[in-house]
Length: 171
Image 1: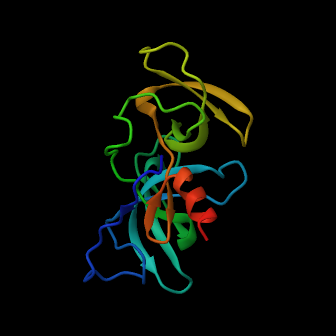
Image 2: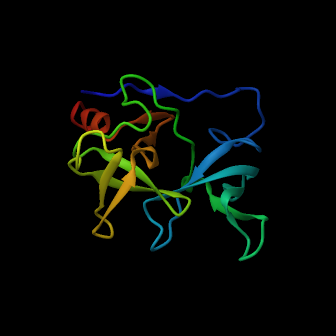
């Protein structure tokens, strides 16, 4: 079944980079560094920089150094920033419900959402989800509340991997 597209809401009068984010807007940063590919870190835009096209962000859960409580502030390329995914809505499974077997999911590990694949549920109603991470070839178990459906931000809208395949084969 093809999942619905979720349009992004935006105030057209706000000052920002064309197609970009304004200061104070919550986003996710997808680092383009070895060892962090496939991770999505929650952050808030502090500043948009048109040349080169970058954003300065404060991370929600990363701090400047050990023992510090100041959020880590970084300037990241615009291509590595996306809005935060929308809350789950029908027909998506309810929050905390186990995903379908082989569904693309994001699992929360050490303050970042990592892309993986849901494996067969262990036991009905135990609240656990087993996720395989193809990039690292690891298999880990999570509470269902720490797993969300994976969505990609494509051309200004949220798409599930299933609908992306449909879009690709429909051309």
